[in-house]
Image (tube, rainbow, N blue to C red; front, side, top):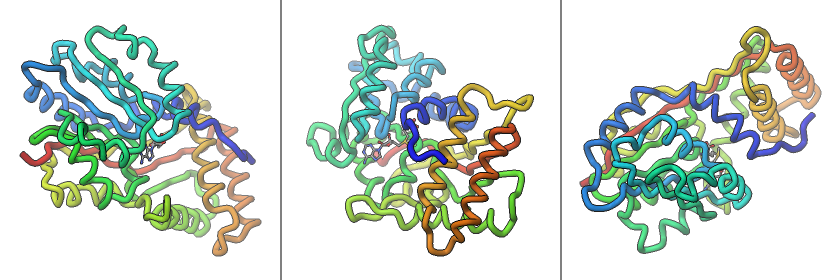
Length: 296
Ligand SMILES: C[S@@+](CC[C@H](N)C(=O)[O-])C[C@H]1O[C@@H](n2cnc3c(N)ncnc32)[C@H](O)[C@@H]1O
């Protein structure tokens, strides 16, 4: 039983899982489109929304996404949680102080909607990034707000969008496994924030036409499933902690659910945690990545 988790440690442990999962074809398409769209007379302006503790900007630097930008990049990363931004400031001190040649990083605690409402941010950015975020938002409300911050014919990169499949293996009880998966997904579909719908368990597949409806063109799309498994009987890096957090999310979401037998659910969680401790648990979550261009 884990009643609390360290969310910033969860995000740090997720970095390696995401690195494996991210769709390389989509990434390469983004890199190519970026190279062809570099501004001549000013820095490349990048905005990341829901940046957490800043693992994506680290990745962009390490994977050389901006290597053709003549080292002239202004990267703004926002997150609504101050605690995440504080950790990002510590982790990324070398970037925030201009240590990475030419990349200027600005970190800010801000909500997407409040940030987008500032006049100066309208059509401001050459590239907008949202990683493991869109499935937490109400797409019809969030997507136009995100895209309006991109300049005409600028780019978007929306990665790790959950898409309706969660697998824990080996089976505990096929019927109970399926019921827990279905109820967990339903909780994503009925979640609210500030009285508004918030999230969708099929965000990945819905994004394609939702982007088109906003006048955006998808240049590449592909799957980016999380697959977490033991290697030689043990989970690499901090991925055992990552899995314990996933089980915690399932537990706290479904605890007390009227359609779930409390005793059976508790026994299911105990079995899953034993599988994790013994290095037997396999976890898969289906997700999709997209990159493309906003309307001209
Ligand atoms: C699942 S986490 C992903 C964080 C980071 N992108 C990563 O993958 O490590 C989602 C993040 O979005 C932030 N977030 C959620 N709603 C937001 C909003 N409306 N505006 C800004 N940030 C938001 C949360 O605080 C959280 O850090």
